[in-house]
Image (cartoon, rainbow, N blue to C red; front, side, top):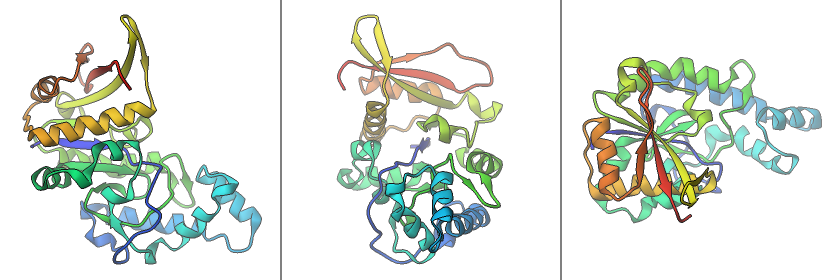
Length: 268
């Protein structure tokens, strides 16, 4: 399937890794290694608060965490020696439950590992088979010496993801916060498809959904993988979704911007 699929991470993560320690040099797109090292170091420094309540409070605020999540700081502070697991197992949220990687046939799973990139405030992007430890680092965080992660990764990821897209279509299912880290350039925008999920309660009455938006996107990717879809253009990608019986409506095309579609669901 010559299509690049971009997913958001999930806030929900596995409690712990099960295998070897983190090795940044073994993650995909090795040109991101220096940036990953910088962000990881900044996160660990911020999270290593010691006995200072004031430092812990500042770290929690910077990471958008509550006082009840203080244990996440201790986890972050030792990420460089924490056990890892494949990213597809670390992320456990609604989208990943619907995607159901563990129950995909071998061929579909191989395709997922080859074509899916998951956005991350800590790693930039990872593939599903990349081994990472559970962590807490939202894209909205500000880290010492790094600053706002969204702006940091936007500078770093621009050439990397543009190259990773190659000549095929891109299915961009990232949430708005993660989508801000990479905007397809004009020459790629026409090959990029973004998806909005709408719930039609009754004819003519539609609302944007959030929780079930994630589940629908997970099922959408799963169905494409199971079908062995190999679209070579954005039009082919949209057609593949319609072939899978997804009610797709395309919004007006804007030159230089990704093609935007609505997937309309009647049951959540």
